[in-house]
Length: 112
Length: 114
Image (cartoon, rainbow over all chains, first blue to last red; front, side, top):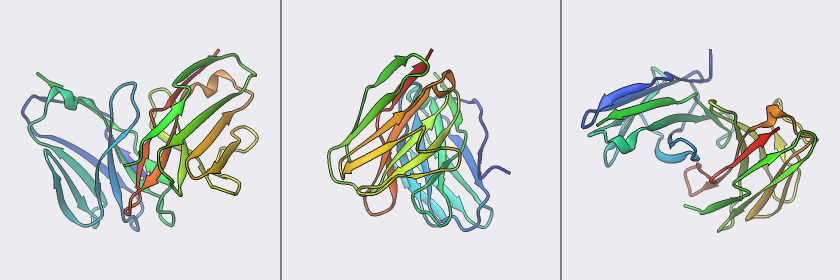
């Protein structure tokens, strides 16, 4: 089992819809979780971090964490074509708060 | 968040040669990291660059192949030595900034080895 798993996609949604991106992780001791957005040919950009169970909202983005089920999700409301990118889930290796383990990423395509 | 720059942004190199990538941060940071992103793949941590001491390498990466320097709290270099086509990747530096262990990435160096 991979340490951080994501569906590679592509996930295709129409403009204005809600895009739901999911990530599961294997280590039950994980405490912090990060979502990065990576446009083609660009470096990853941190868009959300979450540390506690429940929802965290920032503009059109909502991160949801369920530690009991070991998954973290990212919802993008009112999706725009400019949201088309690869979304990477990252979880620090347990015992090291800074050694990030990245999922393979989910490619999101927002259709105009 | 810290502003990070990398040089060069891209390079094409011949096999057997070495390339040194520079990472500069606009503020002092304790933690700096080097990642590799192979074509179509996700990011893999190469090493943690420690100021004043040797870098800490992840499994599968060795100092002879990827020597790292960290002379101060704003600068680090990664050298890719004796390159082969398999080293063709994007190399990214990142820094940990702020109170909650968030990492931010530089723009990356796209390396092609012929």
